[in-house]
Image 1 (cartoon, rainbow, N blue to C red):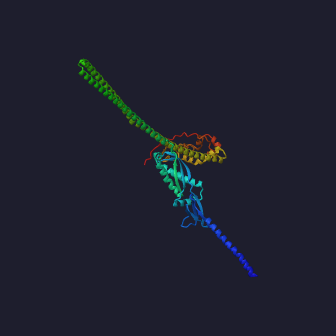
Image 2 (image 1 turned 135 degrees about the vertical axis):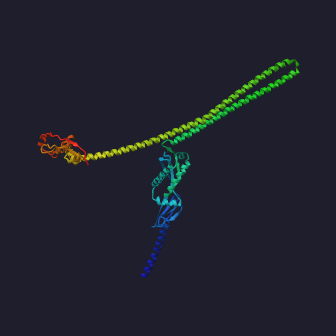
Image 3 (image 1 turned 120 degrees about the horizontal axis):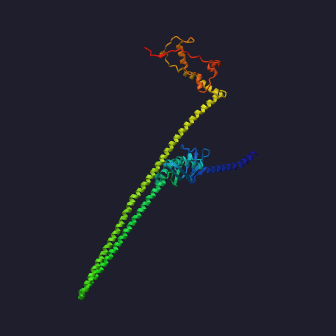
Length: 481
């Protein structure tokens, strides 16, 4: 019984194992197919992770690659071109003239092997807006450098050179981040000072003057041709008339020879014919002189037009050039004067701020002294004077410090009062000549405190002692060595 059960179990488990194996193979195949990635033509397949070769990523364009699970992953870079509007304003040219260069640049991710690797390292994961902002900053910087390296005349007249310099400068920087410059379109160039407009006016003036000169030359040629045609016409008519007269004369001579009876008439006819011939000759000369006069008049007009084109037009151009140079010099002087005025203003402002700070600190210090004196202004002044009192006493003492006592001779007759000699009275009077501290305060409009006066109220009211009536002759003499 048991072998039969085991046999049934074995026969039942075999199909399950086969189904599981087939299912595993099918799932494994599906996983392999899903990990095999194809790259479309408008994208770059970037495989990153463990790619080997010491590289951080592997870039594939127009192919396919198998992405190993766990150790590798992938992402796409879009190759769609991006159009960036760059309006460069107030860029300095090599002549220090500010110009506005509105332009539009078309860029895209490069498919060159080395540059494509830079794109994978620096642009992978960035949005389209972030890539455009990065490219715009690079283009702004390089466009300013190109404008600063060229003159206004080169930028305005030689656009091919300007675009070539921009392409070379911008593309070399874009390659560092994996981008490629596709197209550059400069719409218009305008400068703030009107220099480009002045160049256009100068070129227009040259063209107008050249056209006027050409018209004058064509008019002159037409007048000369017309005069020549009239002259030829009159010459041919005169020659035909002369031939007709000659034929008539021959006929009349033949008639005279054949008819002798009419000799008198023939002679008269001959006389008339000769007179007519002279008249016709005179008229021919008159018409010839008139034609020569018209030709000379046309030649004089041509000379006048030529001199006007050669002298007046260059003079007008030189006058305009001098005006432009004068305007540029005036603008330069105005800017220099404005810079000097700004410097003087800043210096004065700094000095005023410094003086303001000093006065502010002094006012704050005085305010602290008044507060320390109990908000009594007189006591505050006394505090300030007390701080300077040693210096005042020192100055009073120095008033007689430099007097050389040994060079003063006093004649004493021995008469003195209160037990004092004349010498003692002289020294006492000399010291009293120094202004007392109280007198100095009175002259300043202040009153010395009682504790600094050195005497009480009763002593203040006591009359002063009368000066001594003794006479002492004081005579200065030089020391004898």
